[in-house]
Length: 384
Image 1 (cartoon, rainbow, N blue to C red):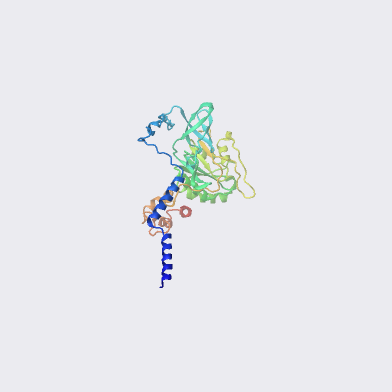
Image 2: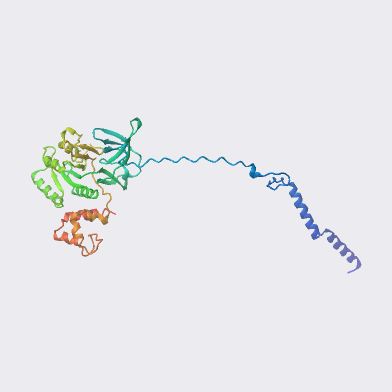
């Protein structure tokens, strides 16, 4: 390298050194930049403390203590109603809707308001006994329902998982059917008997319109009813039109609280009128198009006959579903199955397919009516 090239190289190196920033210069510039940014920010609010040097300021002393709250008055809960409460009276429900009930007292009938309820089992039914209170302005309010001793129930049409009580505190459930127009169905009677057994009530069967049956057909009717008589159920063949069989029926129901249940058109209201003519309940006729009855009773109602018998007339039902029953308990509602069932090989025998079933053996031997076992088998298949 000649002298000229060395000179130019040295000049370039010197110019590069002058442009290069040392470490100290870089730190200085960073600190200066931070000071400029800090000065550009808004001043922070002063944080006052109790140890301020400039002025004696204690924020805790400046805070005013809140006035103590007055103690909340205890909520007075309405005491649970008791039969010993002198304000309460007892009444018998003779008619009920979703919001009101008609209550029979010793010498009067009053209309009472009901508290709203979402449970079907809590709804009042005809025949219930309740405690009610008379309030200012003539208001009568039902406070509580007394425990039921018996009932007749069916699944609620609006919700089959809920139970709808048709009548309460009944002694006897009376299955009312017609010999003809409309022709009676043994399956309906079987279900009424089971519903009565589940509701802890006795049961009887009334076959009306006997005047429409000829002599030969009557003998066949008697044979069809023999399976019910065989298990101890009282069966009455009556004719409201000819006043036949009514004397025996009046004697069988005397002094009891009974609920009449049956399809429309079988003559339930006519039967009540025949047992006590002054009542004069409205009656209807059977449609000629299909032989089925017309609804004349639109809601359950309790009436008291001259001899002290109380009858609850219910709207007509073509089918009576069973509420409160399951397959495991079904056999206990058939008295004729109870004895042989104790001898079955399996304790939880369904009496349908298990080996060494004493119930099926009794049916084959004729000790249990084949028709009654068929009723059990058919209903067993409809239950969960």
